[in-house]
Length: 284
Image 1 (cartoon, rainbow, N blue to C red):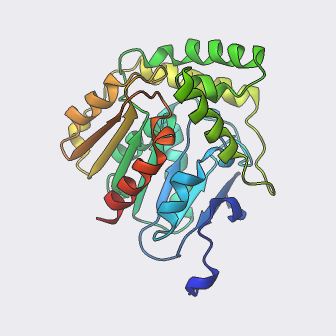
Image 2 (cartoon, rainbow, N blue to C red; image 1 turned 30 degrees about the vertical axis):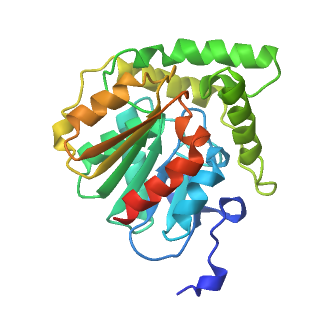
């Protein structure tokens, strides 16, 4: 049992570990006290372990066992990226159960939120609580347009030598630009043991899986009975904000927070307000 003094509560300092399951080796980081039900973080499109905002993850790790991981074929995890969101959810199930857990809370963002929904529907006994941020339901209006939006903003970012997330996650007004720069700076706080960036082929496979998810028949979300916290900015260009309201309407036991004057990265722009709400929800 860890004494509290040697518990790592800063994501910046969490060592990267690996676990092999069959042919696949999953890379992950864990922090916080090693007890109770863990909170597993499901990351966004093109993201690796280095893409979690420490101002979101660190407050949760103050009191909870936190685990972040690279899905198959991404970052330091081996194997090939699955072609569907449902297969990504099966990989998440494989990873979590390989670590020996039979109950988790899930914190998800964007593509991670699609995967979290698929996991909760396929393995309801595994998931105790859900946090769904910057995300939407299967078959949700305009989710399939994420692909075009993403490519357009990658080009815009390349032309201005900036990070595509500055365009994709934040408004291009003074407030948004400043929030974007602060967010990108926070992602750079970890200086050692950085993750490998996603490969172009893995990124394209993820985009194809998102398009497929967006064009598929909707799931019956009334089957999700877990307490669910849903959050987004009020003007999400990637996964339209109206889809957060759609999730809230269709998941009976859910709460919804929409942050003003913000986009896909609303929870990062409003991290000071959102982190305590997430902590309280997960502790309830």
